[in-house]
Amino acid sequence: MKTGNYSFHITLEEPAFLPFYKGSTFRGVLGHALKRIICALKHTSCKDCMLKSHCAYALVFETRYARPAPKGDRISDAPHPLVIEPPLTPRQTFARGDSLRCNLKLFGEINQHLPYFVYAFEQMGKLGIGKQVNGRRPGFTLTAVTLKDTCLYRKGTDTITLPDTLPETTLDLRQQVPPVHQLRLRLITPLRITGREKGPADLPFDVLIRSLIRRCTALLNTWGQGEPDLNYPELARKAAAVTITDNGLSWFDWKRYSARQDRKMFMGGLTGGITYTGDLTPFMPLLVMGQTVHAGKNTAFGLGKYTLEIETQ
Image (cartoon, rainbow, N blue to C red; front, top):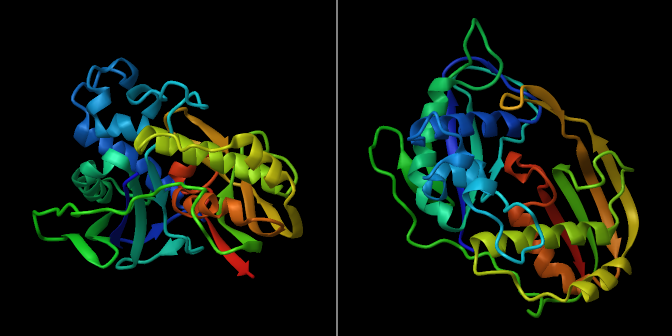
């Protein structure tokens, strides 16, 4: 599955107040801007639009209509081919001239639509982000878009360069990896798992693995080369034998306002660190892929980002 991890560099044009967690802010304005510049049938819903399977907005934000889940998949709706990684600074008050970076991960064929996302970010700057001040939201300027050390777009030019090649995200549990018997997983952004939205502040290893299997296989089946061949019963059995030896997780309460649904939505999740001990080697390819695609629910907002600290023998 082709994976592009693009960095969008912006400079604020005026003072701004942004929420503590900024994923919802960037995701909401991006969706609004992308629809404005792409939608050709503005009075038709995405569900009923004849262009939905070719529309970058519908494919990314209305995925369940534009790209039905592949036949035989274990999920009802195909996953969004996008992960937003917003600025993770805890700062909420910003001055004119402050710079921020928002990362955008695109999966599969959606990378071909990168120019639309660049233009959408330019339009986001005109729409503004964050809390309204004097009746309008503070604007920003898109100064550059980069892919690692390569500049794909720079302010003042009319050229957007598509990368010649992109990394391939794959999942092969048969690959040889060094033995791992203990690791610490650090949740950088809140992790939400179906059925555990308000549960205890713990994360059994088998619960994590089942969530990662669902997400990773669904992404590969929809946006990659198809579902990998996994022995699900064997993985579940081995995952259940892994134990928690240190739990530093806590519950992070977060709510956002959904303009589309016109209501507040509670989207709390787990943050902090947790240490697992046992035979972790068979799960390393899955855990490594999860670092790229995130885990759990609401990954389009940037939730479920984690890092691994591995102790090998």
